[in-house]
Amino acid sequence: MKQHRVLPIVVLVVVALNVIGLLKSGNAIAQNPHPGSAPVNIVAPLPLPISGNVNIAANTAANPFWITTADNPARHVFQFQATGGPGTENSLTLGLLNAVPTGERFVIEHYSVRCRITQGTTPREASVVTFDPTHPTLVEFDSSAVLRFVSGGAGGDNWSASGNTRIYANPGWSISINVISSGSIQSCVATVSGYSVSLP
Image (cartoon, rainbow, N blue to C red):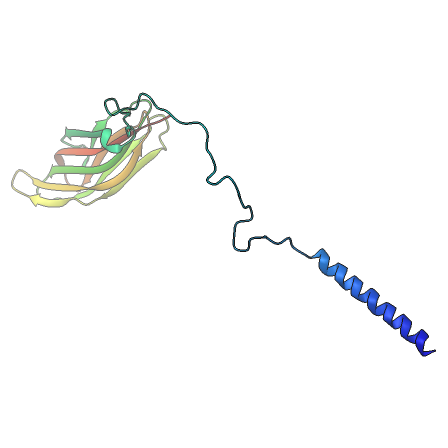
């Protein structure tokens, strides 16, 4: 009887060990024969041969290829200046450009304005404005210019402002500087400068 009891137990233990072995073998991962190396090992030939060549016959010391930066801002600068006056109802608009050329976008980076207004009054605002005449709501402007007193006299007071900005003007847009004052504006001179970008 003891032999019959032991035999099933031995069989169960052997079966259990086989099942465990099968489960573990299902999770086995293929090992790299060269630990620490890349998954793919190129044995030979080393170095790998490369066939063919690149030959640019026209690129010589006497006649080298030139690389140009066609979109470099320094290659497409602009500067516009306008003088105007007297103003109407304490404001003056100086038209600097009627329309940006087709295929170009102007980027305004710097402005300056100098005005002579009635003695004892002060300028309220100077704005750089770009405007799309076909869509009146498309306006970009920078009104951060602060006009500072320069000199004065019986003929009027001189005020000026200058600064950096970044305003875009698309093809067909106009560029201007608007000045508003608490007194009559006798005359102003304004300048904007920047660079143009060619549009695709």
